[in-house]
Image 1 (cartoon, helix red, strand yellow):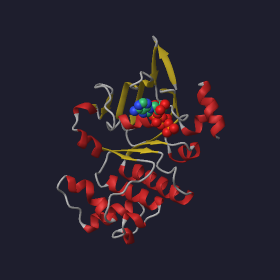
Image 2: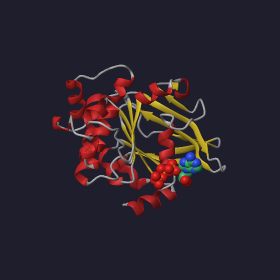
Image 3: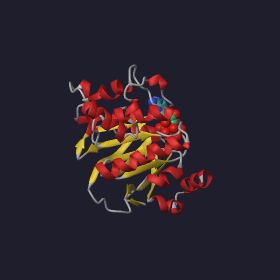
Image 4: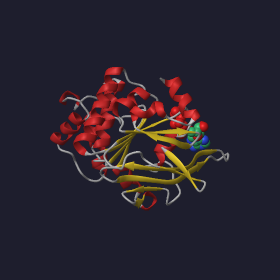
Length: 257
Ligand SMILES: Nc1ncnc2c1ncn2[C@@H]1O[C@H](COP(=O)(O)OP(=O)(O)OP(=O)(O)O)[C@@H](O)[C@H]1O
């Protein structure tokens, strides 16, 4: 739901966050080098411990929005906050540990699956034990036989779960996912979805997922935000998507269903 107050569009969640707000986005704007507006004063509260889906037409700014949340581009200071702290004030590597990201296609490093999973903690001087690696693999729904496999031996779906285990090794508090299953078959997709739901349920993780699949969003998200032309035009619960009022959002939803 949104309302316009004194010319300012304020986005209000239909539900009060149960556990508080994990990230706040305030007037987040991005203009391209050619002076085209990619994001226009985006305001959003991301509640703690929920799965937030981000949907919208191609080119509406979903990836750009997601990438601001862990400074894959540099937002203006005062526009993105993590637990109330301006992310521009945080050490960027620390921020990216706390706010991990998974992309559409997994890019594994050379070496074994275990090498990949150990990579992040090793950068901080911590060597994960075998048991810790096995636990992370299990968390990403991979059995112990994957431990010593080489990245090149894996299917895209398996590699995506290794990439997830590698991200989880940094113990993120927020997980950002940019169309993480669009290259996967339905079974691999379900595996990843199950893991995300478990991470939220068992670890209280806050998850923001960009997806082209409205069905996927309806399966796993607690709240959905609709982005059109660089603006958030609706924030709804998944079962309320058919009630979207914005004309472009309605058209997008009709064509996508
Ligand atoms: N660094 C950049 N410089 C210039 N234009 C950019 C840049 N990044 C994105 N854009 C443009 O901004 C718009 C939004 O792109 P973005 O990738 O965020 O959209 P999207 O909603 O994720 O699209 P899709 O669903 O197709 O992945 C597009 O028109 C894109 O061409």
